[in-house]
Image (cartoon, rainbow, N blue to C red; front, side):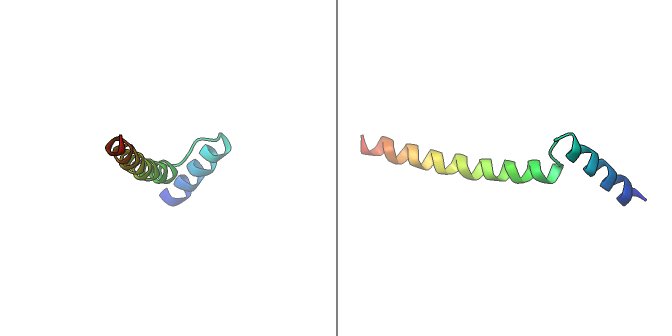
Length: 49
């Protein structure tokens, strides 16, 4: 029963354009990776100056 409730909640959130927990977690991981890449680029740029 809890699975069907969870599915109903997911579908409702999707209809009102609110990301699911999984989507938010995926985005958070991507942001961490991108932040690390930007930091490396900034450090490389600063060392060349």
